[in-house]
Length: 316
Image 1 (spheres, rainbow, N blue to C red):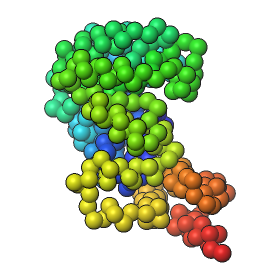
Image 2 (image 1 turned 60 degrees about the vertical axis):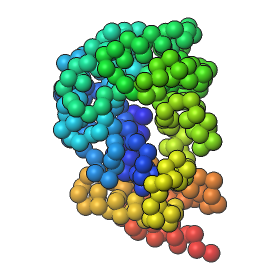
Image 3 (image 1 turned 180 degrees about the vertical axis):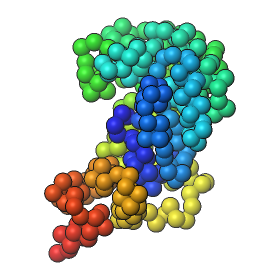
Image 4 (image 1 turned 60 degrees about the horizontal axis):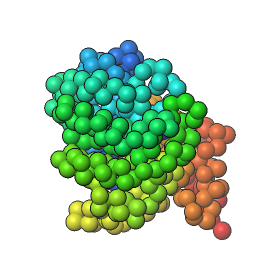
């Protein structure tokens, strides 16, 4: 999720779930090869396990960037073949790569030859208004022959013309059965379903058919949902400290993190606090709480002082 799941967002989400795998926002090969590598790749060790998602199509560039990902400590490299934005299309990568499965396979092979960490693919089930299960089946079949074992499948087509990236997340119909069928047709592959998942019951249902579920914007806008995942999906691994997590303690931990980032001169607290705004979704007083944490008129204050102000406002 470009410009959303940055390192501050991932640090926050890791406070809510210890076990779920976290993915970076998509980073282009050009940004890494010709830009500030540290700005794009640094992360806090507390975020682990974390995967780097790459956008690109040139095998040599992908291999070099995969090496950078491994050197910086990422546990996985994921190639984006699902983003439909015009900017990505101009770069000839993202969802348009699904028309070139051999090129994708070459990129996967080059990355696998360059690193020892897993190399995975995220993609759609098809392109534009043409709906054919055979299209996505053949794409997965070709890319898997290059050695890719994990496919994260957004269960919608990507419409490259006529729809905005936002509408591409809601207008093309969801076809979960096609993702289930991929698992039946390729039982030796890890198939992860993505798209339209908004509650844990849905996750549980999908897990009866596939190996995993990826959640994006719903988890971002309603992050406290993540706090139930460890108990529900990894019950045998829950630790004592997980049972005492509350919204208040998570907020306090993030305030401490914001203070530390400000001390390092890495980020102003406002750029970090934006990721917290869904923490109290559905609670009484949530609107006022969000208003304070997003108030640019308070930017001269330290985050611990902002929290003190919030607590004062909440006191009857």
